[in-house]
Image (cartoon, rainbow, N blue to C red):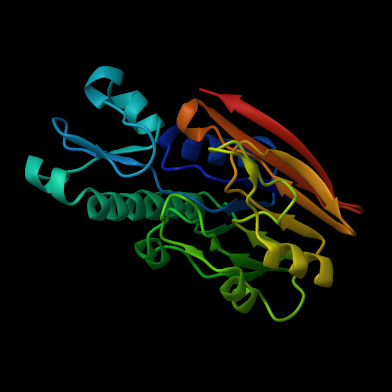
Length: 262
């Protein structure tokens, strides 16, 4: 079995397109996306507001690059964009993901996709739940992360994360947050390990075959926690590259990292 694993696509239409192409090119059996499907800016072509991250100007960068960087064009008045950018962004992000998933399904792509901390609850309307079985393997998802400086939608306490985690072993844990101390080093502000203690405890206790993560874009790599292979493919989707991991499960799990620039 071969898994194509990506994360933190942040609305990039180019990253979405390339993920589908890679699935077939690499002969994957399953696509796993470990959260953060939402981009950060909305525009009506005249007025642009960015809810997260740095400001992107579609008039200066051009329509194609704005969309590739995860921006959304919306039909709204200047006042609506100014006053309701978060709501417009959340709905536009859910629509884009809905269309993408429908296209994947129509093309025969098998997928397991969870939300991440910047994904508004609207995203739950188009995703298909946090548990599934593929090829005899049980997959469990966790979209929430420990509190961050950003005040995003899916942040909570470690105690609450412990309550949200599965009460029994899954073969594959797909958690947007990495485990504390592994694949979780952030360069933001003072930097440091920002993963979840509860996720680490769960992995150490249940020893799933795989744990697949995202969230910390710069902490790309693989790690071993006992018998568990943990993977964070990293992300540069907003900046011109699709980063990905390929995991082969014939025998001992083996992961390799790759990227496609655009």
